[in-house]
Image (tube, rainbow, N blue to C red):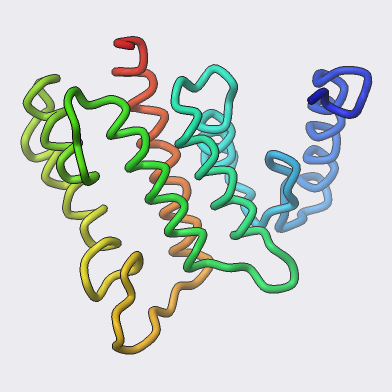
Length: 178
């Protein structure tokens, strides 16, 4: 599947030009991966784009980030809950691919990375707590029979950017061990 233009470079030039105009006009939107999205911070955009890059060795994680971005940007009704779920699936996919052995959960993969790659325990524990928050019985991925989980744009964007940064870190640090 080609880019639909003469080349991918022309499409990227068009997206860059469009974003320059959106920025100049003070728009609250930018063009990311074919989606008009309400994310304007350059560092956040760069993190998301890097996790979607063809250089990223985690194809499964990239697909989840792409879906999370699509759900976050969906018009007229963004799907923040499922965007968060896809973002977490991206982190889980990258962690499982990075970690040696068979890891059934994101927490297992993080523990395996800590042991095999010498990650600091405080770092691995913080990842497990953050991702655990989104996976526990009352959390996001398994919203139980209680009150529906209310997720807003700010939280969904935070999780998308955080998970894309996590995927990028794992790809840069451990992606070449294949």
